Length: 143
Image (tube, rainbow, N blue to C red; front, side, top):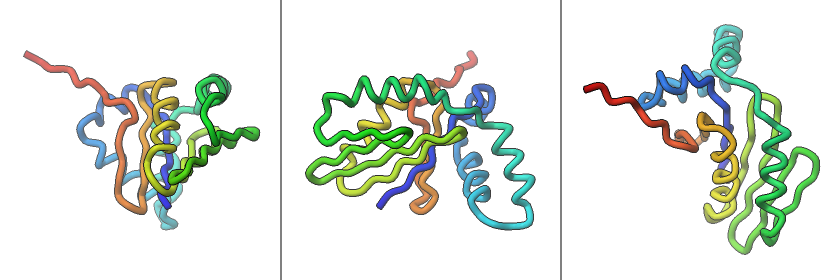
């Protein structure tokens, strides 16, 4: 099973770390660990993340998913079950949690809807070491 934590990153921070996402991944990896620096790391994560716009996201999910076979919604939990793919999205104030298994089809549907809501969502799967922006950030080219 794959587990993604999805954070909405402050625009200035996102643009600064575009192309160097490994640093953000390392911060969130440390954030999930229990250690002496936990308070400092927690403050850093709170500083660079912004609250999830839950109401617009809920509306977008329900509108986009209502015609998808196997979609279920209950409060702040959304689930898609297909033949060989399952994904469950839970919405919290400062992050989204996406758990999935099987093929990538169901999770890709969620990622696509989330990506359209804001440009600076960062998805992190600490157990497999995977991370990335849901919508690639365009870097400025200085001539």
